[in-house]
Image 1 (cartoon, rainbow, N blue to C red):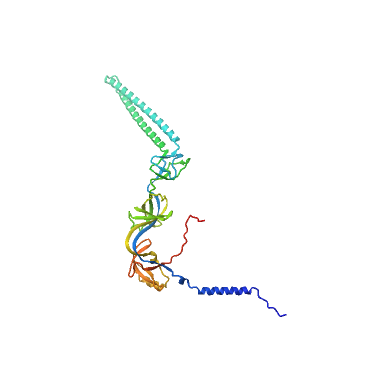
Image 2: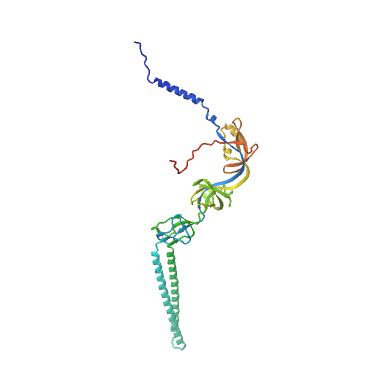
Length: 400
């Protein structure tokens, strides 16, 4: 019997794996480099039109007029007549502090007043009695029937009674003032709305003790009119010289990302605000909120319009920031030709290369900059950084 050749175990799998690796390497070598798949930039066109220069900031919405309602007396909250979002009118009772202690104090002050009035009346009677006594002694003195010392004693007694009467009259006035004070405190147990408006905050509950010994605690916050709002925003000192009262303002809030609201700069406050060494100034923007879409406390992204040019050659700010993937030596030669106030635009040529154009920059808007230069006109195609695909996610909304 002829000898049989033995087969090496797994040798077929070895050769198959080797062929796959070799094929993958050939495929990789045949692929074009990434730069040849697509140009590493996008393009936009130079345009002619209106250019708006703005100053951007962030701020917080608040009612135009807000009143903090407190209590001048201490006690336990007995009842509440107003709650969040409720409309109130001037003088309306919105809370009641337990009044028993204050009623007792009023009764005590009333009794003190009655006692003081009785003492005053008694002193008045004593004055009249002293006057009659002095009159009798004076008649006897004319007939030399009494001594001079008795006349002096009667006159001194009258003066003392008159002084006592004045003291009792003052005590009555003091007791009446004390009664008025206690009545005032009793009336203050009824917390009233100082203005017409809407309750936007309530800080107490029934049964809670209010302590007003050191400072008046805040019980309610009432906004006069939510149809008129304001934004308090801080503008950096670098831009505060450009803004002025009356400038138009546009802004957005996170609740309505697609909606643009409008307002007017009402005040630029002179008080500096220093945060981490940066000086800012508070600017107040008045806003119409007729549909009540805006709520107190919302964060607003504000754009203050400081200048508007109707007819201007302009280009995207991204085009002025674009740096092509070229040798550093060539880029350095282009940079060396720039003067202050100039920038470089890169325009694609017919062969796919990029050509540098030096332009003079002017007004800088939020997204565009005014330019001028030889050979630069509306419709010129310029390069900008390549746009990347981004996945937009909506916060707080689940699709599943």
